[in-house]
Length: 387
Ligand SMILES: *Cc1c(COP(=O)(O)O)cnc(C)c1O
Image (cartoon, rainbow, N blue to C red):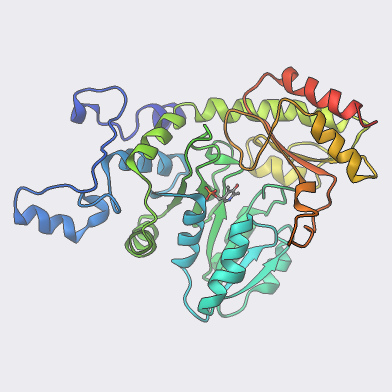
C-alpha cells in the first residue's frame, strides 16, 4: 500500500463517526453490550472487540492498523512507552532457563531489562558484537530463544546484517526482535528481511512532536495475539486514546519529517567531517562510516541522529563548545521537530556514579526540522571557538 494511503486514510472509517475528517478520541474506559450473546462473542476474542480500553479501543485500533501497514506485518500493538514494547516483546518469548542473545550496546533500559530484570527470573544472556555474524553464531546454545537486535543503535550506530541474522536464527528456531526506532519504518522494514518482531520507541519519529511517550510492537497475527493476551493485558501496557489520537496526527507528516531530518543530517555530517575541530563523525550513510556499504544496502535513508568526536584535549574545551551552542536544546530523546544535543561529558563526573565507558569528547546530535544553514551556522561558530 502507498505510504500516503496508510498515513492519511488507512483504518479511518469516517462514515462510522459522522463523516468527521479527523478521527474522534474515544475517551471511554469501557464499552456496553445489547445482549448476552454479543457480550460472550466479545469475550471470546478481546483483541478484536471493544470491551475495555486496557485491551482494545477504537482510536487505538486506527493507529494499530497504520503501524502494522507501515512495518509490513499482519498486526501491531501500541504501548504506553517504547520500554514497555521492548519488554513485552522479549518477555513473551522467554521462560526461566532460556537464553537471550543481545547486541552489545542496546538502548540503556533494554540493557537493564536483559542483564538485571530478566536475570531475576532465571533467564540467561550473552551480549555480542552484532557487526560480526560469527560472534552471534558462536553465542547460540540449545537454550537460546531470542536474538535481540538494534540496527543501528542510537549513539555510535553499529549495524547488524539483518538478512543474515534472520537466516541464522530461523535455522536454530530462535525468535528475532529488532528495535527499529532509529531508521523508522520510512527507511527500514526488518520484517521484509525475515525479522519476526519489530519494536519502536514511538516517542521518537512515529509521534514526532516531543509530546507523547509510546511504543509499538509489530509482527505476525499469532505472535501479536500471544503478546496481547499475556504481557499487554497482565502488565497493563496500554496507551491512552488521547495519546493515540496525537500519534495519528503525528503520523500524517511522518514521511515529510523523517525525510527532512535525514536530508539536513546528511548536510551537517558533510560539514562536520570537514571541520578541523572534529576528529571523527559517526553517520551510517557517510562514506567515512565503517559499515557504510551495509547501511546503504539495508537502509533506504539514515535518519537525523549523528555523533561526532571533538578534536580537543581537555574537558574544559569540550565544555566551552557546549556553552557556545545556542540552537540545539541540550536534552535526551529525539525524533521531534527540534534539534537536540547530548554531550557525553554529562555521563562523566556524575556524583555517586562511575564514569561512562564512552569517551567524554563525543557529542550526539539529533537534527530536527530547522533550516540546515540555521543549524550549521551555530555549529560553525561553536567549533571555531575551540580551534
Ligand atoms: C527512547 C528509546 C527507547 C525507549 O523508548 P521510550 O519511549 O522512552 O520508553 C528504546 N529504544 C530506543 C532506540 C530509544 O531511542
